[in-house]
Amino acid sequence: MVKHEDVPEETMQRMLAYLRELDCMLQEGKDAFSSQDLADTLHMNPAQVRKDFSYFGEFGTRGVGYDTRQLTQELRKILNLNRTWQVALIGVGNIGSALLRNPELKRQGFEIVLAFDKAPSRIGKKLGSLTVEDVVKVSERVREEQVQLAIISTPVECAQEMANTLIQAGIKGFLCFAPCHLHVPDDIRIVPIDIPMALGKLVYRL
Amino acid sequence: MVKHEDVPEETMQRMLAYLRELDCMLQEGKDAFSSQDLADTLHMNPAQVRKDFSYFGEFGTRGVGYDTRQLTQELRKILNLNRTWQVALIGVGNIGSALLRNPELKRQGFEIVLAFDKAPSRIGKKLGSLTVEDVVKVSERVREEQVQLAIISTPVECAQEMANTLIQAGIKGFLCFAPCHLHVPDDIRIVPIDIPMALGKLVYRL
Image 1 (tube, rainbow over the protein chains, first blue to last red):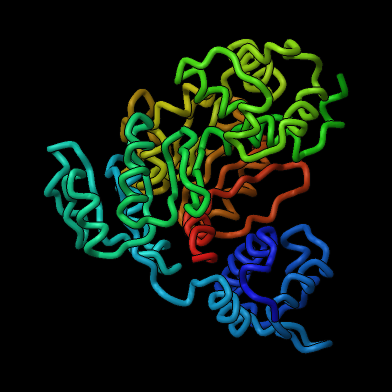
Image 2: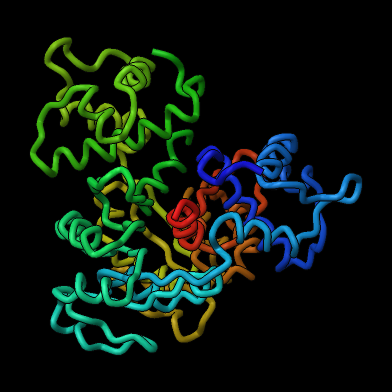
């Protein structure tokens, strides 16, 4: 088994995709599977699946395949997902409040523990067990709660400034719904969720 | 200039990313740029940028660079984004209604023209200029309006059945917010928007 940081980025991303598939298999009651099964659903080569797994040890049984539940647990451990991560949400507009009501996030190990907005009409509002706080407190509160992840769902004009503040407060990774390119240091991860761009992927071959 | 279908998938995806960047540049008032500028923001090699562009013709001027506005138009043409695409929205819950209120979609050329739900409390509701219709009419209405794109934001249990119906009605591409793997024919495109998986990408190196 190699050191985590020596595993290629692409492999880590595929491990996440495998975990997602295994999750679906469990929901469908599929308790065991072969590398071929997994490769087929993801339109991949089974040798690639086996090679990716081999970075982390020996999981399957030759001729029998993999135990879905057991491998799910192994993947969660490998991916740092065998725990709950606290998340700060910045911007409680349409998308932000939809995320707060999404039970899937918590099921997958992500809990929104702080929510901020700058609109006076939203500050102080109760959303589930959370109270929306004034965005001026974001730095102080993120530090206090030692939160490492944030979701930015503010208007595009505020996104970069918000990212700077959050990084200073200790945030290490962002999901960003604002349609812009954020400039951040190399050790900070950003994953954009860009819905128009996703729609764009549907049409260039039509 | 090569035929569209001979351009590698990865190039097409990068063309979309370039378009997104150019859009940001225009908003920031940057009227011209070099392949180096574009490569730097995207953490790429400028030779790759030039190679990607070269599939489609000669755009820049040596020593001067590219005209942002002009190249934006060229990219939109190449990516089939120089028109408005009609979209059907299935599931008007939290995420669905957030998308209906998102001005960015229309700005990028995607207009939600049909919205469906199965909850009696939502059917008939006016959301902007749209009226939410009963999901039993989805097939008939998608055919009538000749819509080719759909966004599935239903609960996971309904997603596959919905996809089957939509494909029969002529939908060629899906955005899917339901956290599951949809099985579709090879000529149908699906882009999943998987928020827990996106958060997962933030933590495996932490």
